[in-house]
Image (cartoon, rainbow, N blue to C red; front, side, top):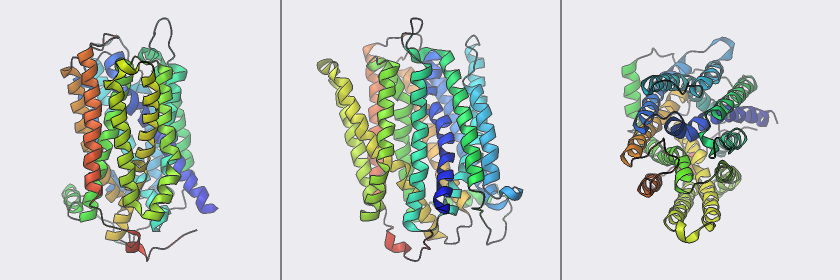
Length: 455
């Protein structure tokens, strides 16, 4: 029971982190272009720069967390606490940008806030990811801890959609409620409070899961970090998980950053309909977790992950066809998309638990003593952040290329089609390439027969 409570407290930490970051991921591209009226290329550039910064700081924070403890808070929890406080404060400033500023000043404000947010997010997420490996020590337990983490992460993803409905309703002044700037500020305050509470619960509930050093403390060296990162790609399985996960997360970045544009301008959906679709996506991601966990125990992790990717691909194709035939389908298109969204959610549920579990497996396989858990974790986040930065920058540029006009509530049909192409082509290429990479993964449960099983 004590171990279950510990896992619960650990998972709750992902709820606060998720609700802040998913609000930014889901809404900020739309907020920046349609509400702040900043060109898509500039918003894409700001997001890309901050994401690259996040990637660069990941290995640094990982090294620090592995080698320097903060008093009684240890090697993980002290950094998690600092990250909690920083994210809670900076998040509010991101959404409170005055609308009467010039485009240049808005861009600088956005960039500075996003850079600060990513800095504190790194201080939180890199030690947090390593903490999961400190709590558990067996093959299936590593999947179970990711399930706890994923369920709370998905709950955090659901909350922004609920808050969208509560604080951005359709009004006479804003027939499309998602264009109301004031509502985003209320959402920001609520998200920051949730982040603060959940972060503190996580820190206090996992204090006894302290990371201990079994080797000599290393001196910080950029050159050595770069060498370790390069060496991580020399290991066959570590390379596969890093590349496969990075590719799969590109699909998530594209779906979340362009999804609001797609449903707002291509279908003209209200905030209520968009909330229903997003909630269905996240609900099925959450309820799929026991299924993928049990399938991974029965068939192993790789077959379960590949099955999930295939299910996601089918769902994306159905949504694409719904857009192509939307004039024929009429109102039926919403219900078809709703079913497809549920399929996508069920399939993508695997992406938020199994790859992370497989990466912990690789770490144990390479280094059973696990002295550098946070550093190794940072290599994964560094890689997918770089991939996401490139993808989001390209998305921002493409929005300008297809002549998306943030000053118009209706977009021309060619622009609508352009938004759909960005969404579908990007998501499908990402998911298919991820499937091909993960299909080469070879580690199985039999490689971990000497794992220590904990209660």
